[in-house]
Image 1 (cartoon, rainbow, N blue to C red):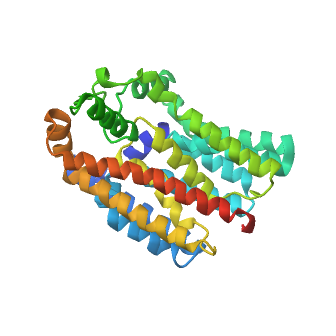
Image 2: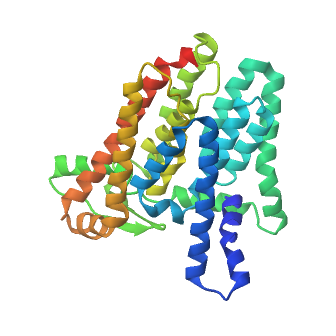
Image 3: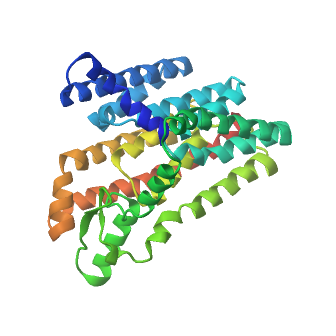
Length: 351
């Protein structure tokens, strides 16, 4: 996305100070992400005393991967959007969500939730206003991108490129397909590098690739029908809940055909902003322990034993233990969704 491209240019500023050096570029990238961490901590501290420590614990168990990605940039903008909404600056909140979408595609998944709350509180007029500010946020970034000579076709080509990618071996789909093939055919299937990722060979897909590209729309639509019911019919979900945003992103990732380790940071930085004054604290604590377990297992696979997973298990069927850990991690993501779902909708009337 356009703003992601601009973000990667920021470490390049260091190259203006000294001669081109890959190590200095990486160091600059680490410095920028360190600043992003401090900015996260600033907003967490404004929310509660406990929130910064929860975030730091998640980072500690995750390993250093977040230092070399730009996902924390997206989560920061998303958190700012959340705070603006809570402070009744909803136009700016929608603007921020549009900017976040220009960094990564996934914040668009949250846009329907903003629209529902806007329509509930202000009718069609508020709905149109929020939509306008959201697309304004997009255009703030897209306009310079296009003016600098980048054709809009590059974005559509990028989307098509992702659609053509195979089922990623780290995804829940890959775990399920691998287990089914082993159960019915009594052999471990293999993978290959294709489209910039290591995925399952296309001949092992149980259904066409189109299915894995778009099936997530079904569970997400069902989830949004539930949200609609709770906002407009039961009328128990009256304010913006960070837990709902967390669940939306997590549900998408469970059914996505691609699930890289850094994608976990699309929703994990939202957890420190959960509502802790709840009678269901046991669910909250269990969710926190599960999150730490998930990121620890993820780090164990990537980067520590990723080559073993790729070149041993998904090449010749050895080192099965690494696949087992990954498969359990994916089951834990589903369990996390169930726990947070129960936590969210058992306390909604109190928030």
